[in-house]
Image: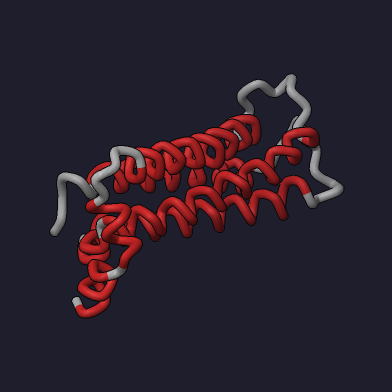
Length: 158
């Protein structure tokens, strides 16, 4: 509670959350949505290809998605921090911690997929092992959980 009270006293919180200007909060949330679209959209496209959707598309060139996904992640980390500064009371909401856990698990899945799919020289892109496909399915599940939990923070919890 002291930490939340401290955040609420900062000038950044005052500017973001209580600004007389119309743009700070909508700008941050718009950037957050765009960053989410990049990381989640590209990650799900990659996951779907691993699951066999659009199998005519070669898998190797999809590795070029990773720098863009990392950029989307960086945008979301910065804007997410801005949103947390605007509404620090969300740190008391258990649904927010579910969101954080889902993001952590989704990023872990992404890291494992990169290592086990793109870094495996013996992998046949036309016959991806079931374990890697399950990992891609979990990746989609975790991103869906993160997005859903993020939206539910406005309706559930403290």
